[in-house]
Length: 240
Ligand SMILES: Nc1ncnc2c1ncn2[C@@H]1O[C@H](COP(=O)(O)OP(=O)(O)OP(=O)(O)O)[C@@H](O)[C@H]1O
Ligand SMILES: [Mg+2]
Image 1 (cartoon, rainbow, N blue to C red):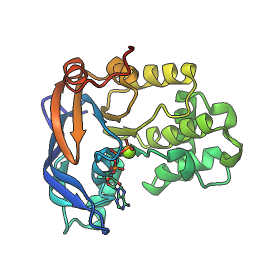
Image 2: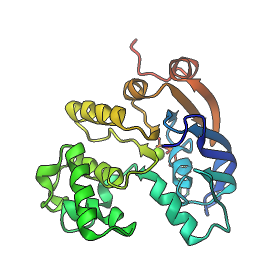
Image 3: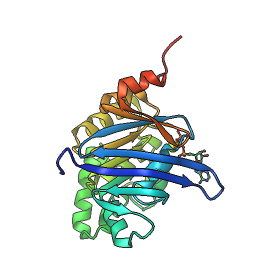
Image 4: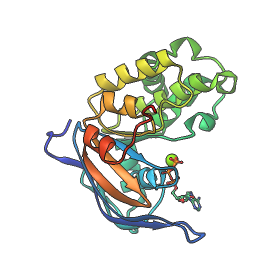
């Protein structure tokens, strides 16, 4: 692990326009320290998913992005991108739709095997990650037979198996039952990695993160202590 004062993510002036002309990110500045956990809030369509897709080079906008000192820009080479992807574990918003191997174990081992580990080592790391998410018993099942919440756990295991420095979770609690959400919370609390947690679940976020950033039309409109951000942007379900 890096010293806690070091930035593992350093984003400056990030702008991104989709090919259809939608300006989704309009000047994002964001830094994250080693081991820090930040929640990302904001309305539907405010740019949260677009932002996190830049953190491992899936999308390339204007501005600068550094991950653990590695710069991702237009001229980043394939090996730089591979190094960044090994450090940033991204669990997609619709991750449960992205399982494609014949067995759960093979799916979780896929990413690790791509990092150049032997198949035995990849399988061992995959089994450990499945234990962590409570899915070891399903290792030989076909992913498409799993329930939505089970698929999500497997998707999370696929990222944990790679032991990244930074975990980026986009709506990780979707489809998880309340015990599953509690277990995920306890798991994430135990993990030493820096975390970016994109979620509309304010209580889940506040149980994990001390800091929140608030996205508004492709900009960060607020960045600070999570409860003050929730209050400033009236960002809770509340009750009448
Ligand atoms: N592939 C795409 N092509 C064109 N526009 C897109 C594309 N993907 C997203 N957008 C637009 O970019 C903006 C930001 O979308 P994004 O998915 O980043 O929002 P979000 O904050 O993650 O929303 P949500 O809370 O609903 O997940 C929206 O206006 C969206 O319509
Ligand atoms: Mg999104």
